[in-house]
Image (cartoon, rainbow, N blue to C red; front, side, top):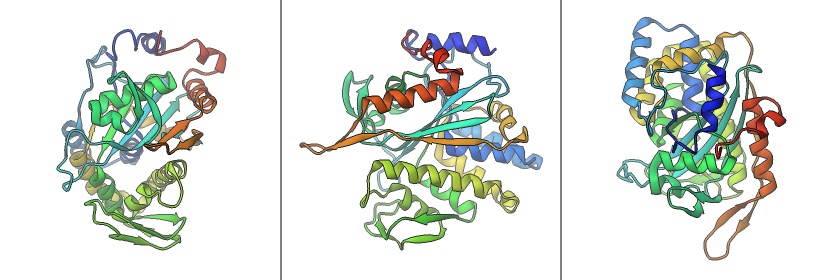
Amino acid sequence: MANERKVHRKKIKKKKRRRRLVFGCLLFFLLLVAGGLGYASFLMHKMKTAMSEAYEEIGTKENAGDHLDPKKDSFTVLFIGIDDSKTRNFQSDTRSDALILAAFNADTQSVKMVSIPRDSYVYIPCEDAYDKITHAHAYGGTKCTIESVEHLFDIPIDYYVKMNFYAFIDVVDALGGIEMEVPYDIKEKDAEDHHNAIVLEKGYQHLNGEEALALARTRKKDNDIERGKRQQQILQAILKKASQAGSIPKYDDVIEAIGNNMKTNFTFDDIKALIYYVSAGNPIQTESLVLQGTDDNEGVYYYRLDEESVEKVSDDLRAQLYGSTEQASSKSVEE
């Protein structure tokens, strides 16, 4: 199984992404915790129904019914947060507001994550042109976004999850809010784009869904790098809250929020397989990677990624997937 997946990875570019493209961080963690804590049967049934409603395949599944085995296989996950809402009429040409790529290693029970700044100037395969990576979703939806990330790091994306503002807000609210450090005073839009609707003061505090979204979105006093770090910290805060025993009765609402406001081709059977990550008895070790770059304000603003930084992050992610750096160097989505 593991060897077959490695061979399959080498063919990804040649066969025009005829792979599974599934899942991403936030929902991945929440659903793992939900399954690992042993829900009542009606909650498991509700989760299965929610996943069925959220399921969306991208491209053609080459190995239909061949599910991941986390005990043997390492894999990647792309979380895509999009900026659609009722105010924006849920249009198909929405941009990605957050991109977090995670690589999971089955042997070490560890995760390496990197946030990709939304204004990063990258190659967009579906347009055969360079542009901000946030525009990839507007050009070609989930598939184009995935292909752009694959091209950037030269690794395959195994899973994706795409969620809108409401999924994020509803999940945080369903859990009763989260505790976060607000780095500075903030006045930010709410989910419906009302200016200065969310006001936060600097300091450690309890945040509801709208407030957590404002913290995740703001970049007025820093930059996309710090914004990406905050988004990862918020994901970790949600995971921490979801892991607490007191959150168990709230999972009914969490599952409902997931089903209503996300798309993924991560199946219910896949989720059950991934329970291994929380049932193995060892805490998941998480490491955050940072993409370095410089601001480019000539005419249109771009974030110019440092090539050495991209290469270093790519090497780290590939080593996480394949083992040693030497082994990773022999793998490529271009092959």
